[in-house]
Image (cartoon, rainbow, N blue to C red; front, side):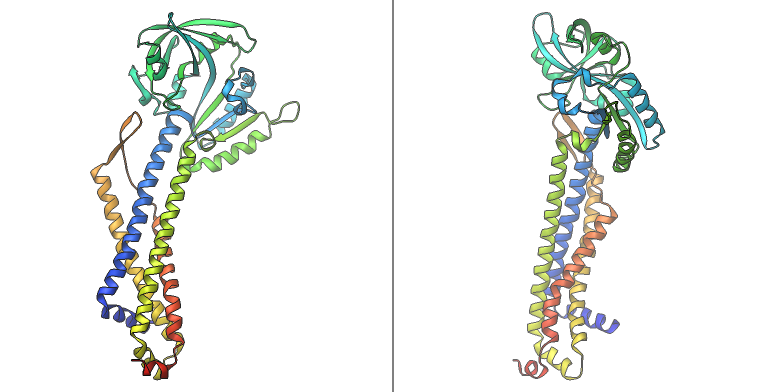
Length: 414
């Protein structure tokens, strides 16, 4: 085997220009794949972090059927005090859960004493909300960020603040219906202006949960949703399955589940973009396979035709077809190996250079987001194995052709 490897290496050095060009083509393919995987993966991870750490959390729990009617923000589908207490016990016993926050989601009429419009509100416990959504404070574009807000204060979405010409420090009035249909109004101080969390047309503001209970005349503790932050997003699937098993066992008097549990993937449209990024990564890998396959096959076919006399000679002196086959396959293997080694080294240098240069980009109103490309060892290993496998596969057909040649006919070839 060592002799075959040695002969294959010598054959590649005999045609240095062809070997160099083929190796460079494979190298460029490997570099393109690894850099794309690292950059796109970094972008996807950053965007997922922005969404989960300022808006959704990693998991959310609602009362069964709440999400199906969330557009109307139904108050009659809130979790009651007993259900909230039971859910808290479960979350506290789960080691992977870092924090969780309670919210009441409601719709109200917003008035600046001159005009009126509708507004959606998330009523929160400020301390718990900031623990679970550590990037939420960065969404406040006007006003004080420290502590989020106090009782009697409200954070307005930018769309409504501009449309109603309301500034930080102004007093506004909220009017809302409780679950029984009665109307109540309450005045609030504008603490700050919030970037549209739900998008450019976002109408979601933030108020204190105790103020919401007062406005809606809710006596006992009840919440619309519970957002959960995990110690690591990599634990999400395991925690989801564990919590789902525990929550599904809890049923009402009719024997139906009380809770419904969702991951951020089911709650955010960005997950579709994340899937598109994964699809593009797969497409790039397919292109790499095509490049390697065509390159290796072309080189090895040319090698076979140029070395017909040589093949005839080594066959005539008793070299078995299996060894001739192994010789050409080994040449393809070495070409793939050289290309992946050089491609991997260049890619790692490129990733290091991008991290040192601290590349930044803007995403909506968020500016100066730093791109930190990284790549898992598993991605490198998979790419290397794919390239080498395709290189061997691409050299197999020409190698079989060489192994099956008739020695006499090969020696007569001019």
